[in-house]
Length: 543
Image (cartoon, rainbow, N blue to C red):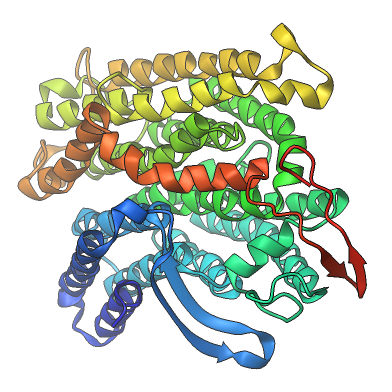
């Protein structure tokens, strides 16, 4: 069986077993299912041809609805495989983190957690637009259930807001994707080797066809796709669902939300927006970058007034992913490499921070900096991990956050062409100015994250009123909790000290995407739109 199909089916099979297994065994079945998917991913890593990382590998397809051009098609390049690896890594960690936090409706909880992992894996593995969109949209259902049933006191509002925001944006994005498929069906005589002139949802075919749209058509498709993916990232000002969802979600829900679900938005920008509508991206990159920087600064300033640690980390995700989008629209090697690496690094460090907050909450039943502090004296192991992951999130040189943030800012600095969109030249090109302003976001992040750490880790010990030792878990971390944090810490350190293998794996994919955006892949052959032949006029490598 295809290894990608196996990684999707194993969690689904485990979810089915959980439904019929005794409640006391549900967590162990879930752990087995996620570990099995992790083993399949490990096999894929060894079998993947990293020397040809930009080529889609492990391809498999089966007709689904042939009359509509639909296929169940999967395949991955290095970017997709690394994001799948992040997904399956967080799977068993989230299951282990839920052992003591989830005590009611355990079968429902673990079954939906497994279904969510399968759907997220399907998003990254899909090579058919409808398969992608089906998995992309279906992730809403398990996450809605996890927030609505297992969240905090305001969980109903958080789940509803999460669903409405993301569902509305996704429907608009679907309209844009369907339009691309319709446009492809109107192309005839363009390339006999591809399925132009027929209804198909094959991503490779539509990627080539979409680049033949006019400037105005690309602009409208860009707007539609941004409506779906920007909400998922989320970008300012459509970010308002995220802090509430993070705050109310159970610990594992927050970890998955920060670690993987938000990356569905950035992955959508990388996989569809950049190669589908490169002309529109080049035209409006300066605007998208500007919105990203507003989000970086706005979210950073909002973090200053937070006393809820979980909400502070949630707003920091808005700021951090602003750097990721900034790197994507830099449209150069440094920016794109940093953006894709940021998807991985943010999932590790911010996911770990939500785990740390969850472990503290299980002991003290509060997330307020006003009620708890000085934990280094009572929880030295927890405090050490907390400080480590905060420094990784801040971007301390030697840890993973620094590499990706530096590359995103470097890409923005080099993106002088942004100035051309508004008539800027020379010193007045926007790239260096954007990089300088975005760099303030790193300083702000360091200030609020270190301030938070100073209050809850150091200083005089304080605990909530009514807190009693016999009502909570052992004061410091146990071996289960240490065990689920160690892989994340090792990866944060490894990617900070020696990121070269990952950067080399990403390089071919990034170069290919840049070639598409800059027009190096356009050939200038004739196409037929609506029955009329139109010659391609190529200027400077781009039509």
